[in-house]
Image (cartoon, rainbow, N blue to C red):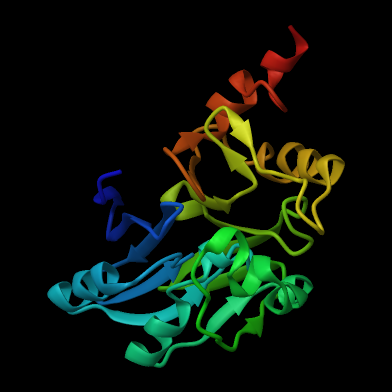
Length: 220
């Protein structure tokens, strides 16, 4: 997939990069001065170049969950910019497994990193409100990051365009995953743009109507 600046609203911008062997969606949310990175899932040279070309100060790294394909580039960015990493404490155990540290299916190992647990609820990044939503099911500690001012949610591997995340990995739960989508994500405004962990972006309204697993389409 082609990496591209994806969206702008007022002073805020979203840039999307598809990183690593599984083309994980890595999103940069930034204004004209500062930036956060969500799910750096591969070698981060493109991200670093983007930041340096625009003179952006990286302030935080956020992880929707701690599977290897969403964290491969975390430590590289930490070493380059010295910023804190935030993820769910409920996923910490994954860093002791192949799904977290890499090596599964012959994939590269993840360079170890430290992170701080982040509480559910309202936070502020880039002077903008960010609601940290608990969306477990793909992993026990799955998170989605909703920015009301951007009309965007970063949902990791919970919700995809016309699909949902896997729940057959250790710690996954199909019933919990579907509940997370219906109760947490589908409660957001329907024009909210959904940036998924893999594949194209979609919207809450579109998936609420047409997703064959959890949307109205399932009734037919």
